[in-house]
Structure formats: C-alpha cells, structure tokens
Length: 285
Image (cartoon, rainbow, N blue to C red; front, side, top):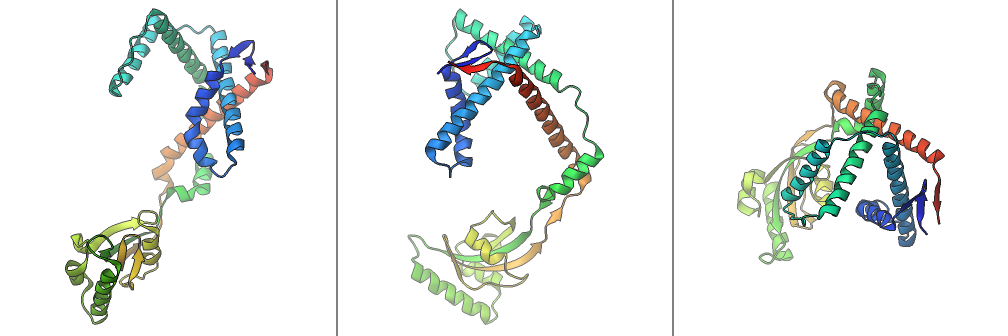
C-alpha cells in the first residue's frame, strides 16, 4: 500500500526511517506490550509523524516564502561542519546529490519560518498560570531527603570469602557494642577506609537499594547491625539527615515560564497541523 497525501506519494522508506528513529525510546516505554501489537502501533505512529511533517512542508511551499542562496550555502556549510565534529568523512556529493541536499535545506528553512509564524503571537504565561503549575508540580521543585552516612565494609571477592568477611564484621560489631569508636574501626577493618568511610550526603536512588533500605531507617547517630548487599557486608552509621526542601517559586519562575511557553508553542503547532489534516486528502492506494 502506498500512502498518498494531497496527491503526493510517500516513499515507504520515510515511514521505516521514522520508525527506526522512534524505536529505542518507544520499545523502552512500551516494553510490556505484545511485540506484534507494539510494532503495529510504532508503524502507525511513524506514519502519522510522516504525514504531519509532509503537510507542514506542503503548506510551507504554498506560501512561497523566499530563501536566499546565501542562507542555503551557510546551512550547507554548517552541515558539513557537523560531520567534521563527529569525525565522519562523508563522500563528496555529486552535483545532483548536492542539489537535493540544498533543496532539502531550503524546504527546512521554509518549514521553520512557517512554525515561527504560527507561534509568533503567543502570550507570555500569566502569574496565575505560573503559580498553578508550581503548585501542581511541587515534587519537581523539591530537593529530596538526604542522609550522610559512613560505613565499614568487607567485600566478598577473590581475596575474602563470605564466611571470613562475616566473622570479621562480627568482631567489629562486638567492639562497637563494647564502646569502641566507629571512626577508629573504619581504618582498621574496612575495605573502603577513605574519608573515615564517610560517603557524604545522598538521596534515595544513588546507592544500592538494599543499602538505602537500611541507612534511611537509621536515627541520627545510630549504628546499624551487620547487613548484606551485593558488594559484601556492611555496618553503617548515620551522621546527618536533611529533610526535603521545596525551592521557592521565585527561583524557578523562569524555568516554569520556559516550560509553559514551549507547551503553548507545541499546542499551537498541533492545532495548526490538525487543521491541515482536516482538509487534506490522505489515502492509501
């Protein structure tokens, strides 16, 4: 089946290339979907993207927006520079291929100008909109709870087997319970004695889950029992706990305004494309 948009045939390779562009992120997001169903949806979404892009190109062409040769040459040189930065050495195009590339560049410039025209009169987000977005998304502007922890660790590796490591840690725990200073035992027993075993401050998601499950449940000043992670045996001590901190609206105001303006821009383009689709002749033959 050949896709035809307003009388213009669409090469199947365009849809396939769009599918390959989308595939890595798409397959990650929809990993639980049936493989065949996922592939059908990917191709359908890719086809929609190609149709929308083609409609914008057709509209840009119809407006007869002029593009100077200097603009085309400048963009062409930028394209060659990008290849150079990526240490790629493209084959020098022949005259026909170079003309196709420059025609594509001219069309892209026209599309960019069309999009700019569509979105040129968008208003700035109001104070009310900024405040509403802030209130509804406070989790994104909050520094999560953090803890500062030190640990004594015996790794399980080729030098130390599990039984030997556990016996060493039991010896450390006995000394701690007898009143020995945690910091003194770090240098004598830990496989990671740097900085007194101090790991600094961190939030959840930065350490091994089984390590965090223990240390985030300690009280300040409390020392844990022996516990096991994928790395070996640990005894941890919590030095400090920092509660979550909400960043003030004034500090994130510009960032929120950018996000809202970008959403307005995207919505305006979507509305324009939907209008083009409503009057377009799209068929498969």
